[in-house]
Length: 522
Image 1 (tube, rainbow, N blue to C red):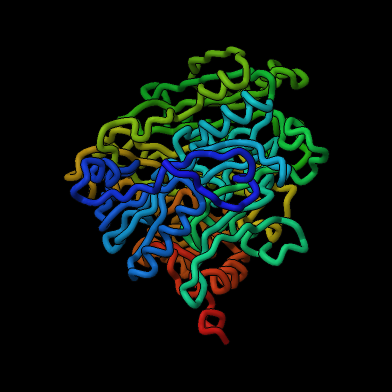
Image 2 (spheres, helix red, strand yellow):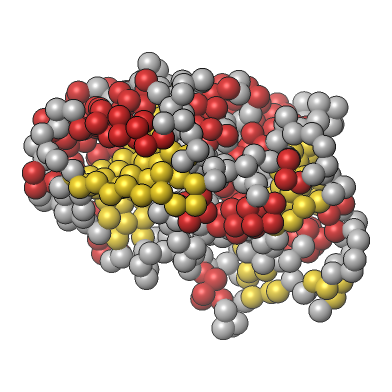
């Protein structure tokens, strides 16, 4: 054990004993365990892992790898859907999972969250100690490093915005043109010379510019020094509805009506200032072989007419469907209620989980043809899966009070869609990948197989990374992948890349590339 003498603000004060960074090579008993993360489709085989406990150790580890000319990638908790960390040519993986502290930094007057902190730790620590929260997601094991940098949305985003809307500062270990490694803190302050690096981490995604070590969170409108007033407070309790529609009694017309009802309600109740933006809902449309159509919805108990508004919402969904659903309604304190939707902090839900995900963000409902394509694939008797689904997720509200150019993540969507398939047997890879790829292609057939921004789509979400968007076999639209993820913000992200990672040290299959003139130093 040794003391880590980092001179950054949050590490001043009483001496803290910090373990040395840990080198794990193939002859170490821990190596194979570290090789397997969330998605068993991609098993890492680097020369070594480096487990780090502090920003200084991160800097030393990056310097070591750069000096040796080794390809380096970064893992916070390992939930990436593609091989961004575990690509075959990666020689060094920097594992930040030991850096999981959530605390308050009085010098920056903000909450400090280390990149390896899981979402579950963030939620519980912020609430238990200070009664506040950040609008993050419900997958408890996902690390802050990737979640926040990609935009970070969750069940409270309609009320509170995105996680990045509360991001005050980010600490990043970067490598300059001369291969000099340094640690930079970038804030949202207008006069901060590093502000562009802060902006790039408000939706630009992880693994692009350097190694994120810590975030500082404080709401832009917050004032004073009382920590309890520097981030939003969550609801005291939630009124919850859990609803299920059985496939065996649902006709195609009933299915189309149900999904259409859900989308119509969201579009009518997700605008800025809508009185129903406090009502969150997720509609999970599983393949007929893996489950039913189910809904989770909640609204704060303290909101005006909460039970009545929930009842009106459920009645709107049922209109014309022709199938009486199973409904369970209850009320629970917020932290307990949040577990209803949570994916536990246990990594894969099954040993050896393999998965593929896709996404599309909507500003208008899917057409009848799109819903027909969805129904056809979800009821295909030739396909059998473990979990195969399309989710429609409430969005909009306060998210869209922020201009698109103010953060790296574009705005304007009122509803999210998330496609996911999971399985365990590697021999079934082609079957499951083909199913989800053809489903997505057919739903978006009128725009080249991908959600090209138009009157219906706003694009896709980088935290649900999908390399198919860069594959001309599956993206025939002529629109590049980066336009789907970043829209008009991509050129600015390229400029930030050229400034902070001109040598492209930090890269992956969908990483941001520097503009050619900037990268050449012209």
